[in-house]
Amino acid sequence: MSTHHNQDSVQHYYEGDQSKLYSGIMQHHTDINSEESKGQVKRIWKIFWILLVITVVEVIMGMFFSHSMPKGLVNFFFLALTLLKAGYIVAVFMHLGDEFKGFIVTVLIPLVLFVWFIIAFLADGGFWLHMNTDSPARQTIEHVAK
Amino acid sequence: MSQTTVVTAAKEPSLWGGGRSPYNVSYGKMMTWFFLLSDALTFGAFLISYGTTRFFSAVWPDANEVFKAFPFLGEHEVPLLFVSLMTFILIMSSVTMVLAVHAGHYGDKKKVAFWLLWTIIGGICFLSCQAWEWTHLHGECGGLWGSFTDVNTPVEQFRRFFGHKSLPFVDAHPLIAMQSTHNFFNYFFTITGFHGGHVTSGVIFNILILVNTVNGVYERRGHYEMVEKIGLYWHFVDLVWVFVFTCFYLL
Image (cartoon, rainbow over all chains, first blue to last red):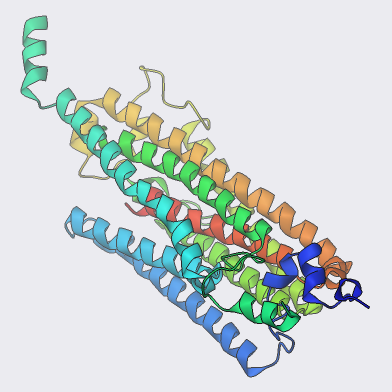
């Protein structure tokens, strides 16, 4: 018989449900009690503890240090810790770290737009506040209006 | 081409010769990623717009003052404690989800169902917390969206949302402070509401795949990729919460 009629052949997967090819089912993942599986579960729980500790540190900083430390420094820590948490979730929980490098890059590159979005919009907000409160132009307008 | 070479080729990240996905991911999973990418842009637009409004406001409510209530504690002030509990619940449900995905990789039907059930319970706990917080803030503001618009509102009604450093400004310019309070709560309800909507649909998806798992749909199909795809969505929702948490409660 030709391989087309063999239910277990790779050809069959190509013509039917392609997900089988990529879902790991063909990569000898059979025993959930194997050492490999236990190692992966261990890693998941490790990441959980890291995320928990980061969150606790953030909350403690927010409760006790946000008023006593320089605001810029506190915010820098908050943003760094947030990005670290996001990185762990995406790389380990979403398994993006296990994908091909090309795919990782494809998903992440569009997010670089955020760098520009954030800088441009926040700068615009700050400029608006400046124009509206303490800029010389504002004082001139108010003077003229009187 | 013999069968064996195809199997080997599917594993090696060498030059792409056609006949398989160049990224070694199925169509459905890749499109899930691109959907999440577009959703990230939506949430990003919300949060950046919140940031812009905050940057052009001379004064802004202090999260430590707004979010300091906890169920059954009455008048005790415990800033950030309740939202920490919510964050913990969501991280926990993310862990149970990734364990379900893991069990799916090994085709272990019972464990997939077990961990999915815990994920659903976690999601429902999170939504209950959010319902309580919304109800509490509804009482604080006298509404959800569009509160603090009446220019005759006494300053006492929104003064308590500001930190002590901002109070001299609030007392000197009550209308500017009221506008900030109005903006703050509008953004809060819009963004946490949109996130809560995602959690709700995530719980519904999880219930659907739990039913399918228990009925053996994925066992017959030969793989649990659907659990993986819904897992991606669920982790994304957790990811968004990480940013919402930072923007609203910490910064």
